[in-house]
Image 1 (cartoon, rainbow, N blue to C red):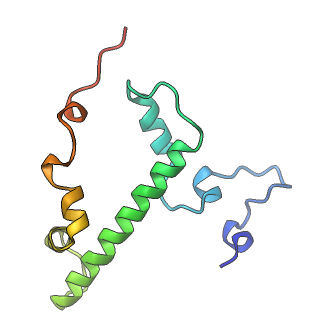
Image 2: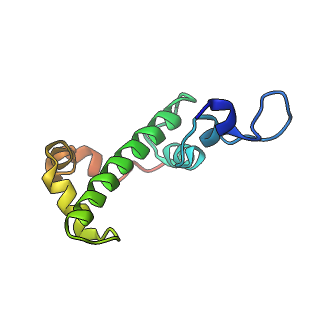
Length: 117
């Protein structure tokens, strides 16, 4: 699919508003990720590409997990994906299992944000 046909009414020549998700050809909301990043205490300065990149990573991971969970549901002769299918897909994939194990993140990341001064 070409970029022009995918963007639809989002042309540079017109004065129409175009979301950052549409410009980046993503399904997940870039503006919401940007807002959530800026609300955190530790991220005072952000590049304009940071929320776009993080949104793309989140969308990629979600698509892979849902694809594997759909395969698990198909193996069990089911049409709908249940939480058990997602859990089984995460446990059967070595990379995703290492990513989502409880010790994958540091203890400092789990601490609450610092109070405002």
